[in-house]
Length: 129
Image: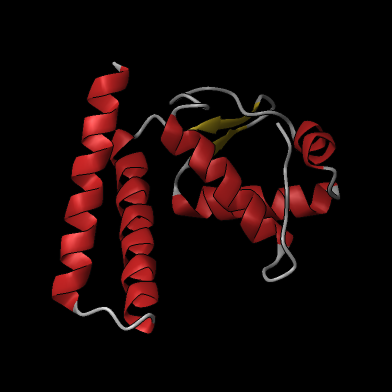
């Protein structure tokens, strides 16, 4: 898994988002032990302190838990994961709307484009099933 970071935001935030995405997609299952700080640092080619800071953010969000002497684990609380999924989804939609309005689209036009693309996506999914 190649980790790519941009210069516009701190690496620890991007790393926390990457791990969060893995949790939300099910790449890291509820209750699963996460790689160690050192392992994450090697995978992402970053300083272990950066990893520690990213994991601290995830722990504050309630997505991961530290178990003394055994490591860090994805939370078993499905509601925490679902809450993060909802927050991330809302942020994506807000960014989409902001970008579309910057292009001069009205709310109604945005809704129409979104609905057409949603239908096209569903059609493609059923053809590929």
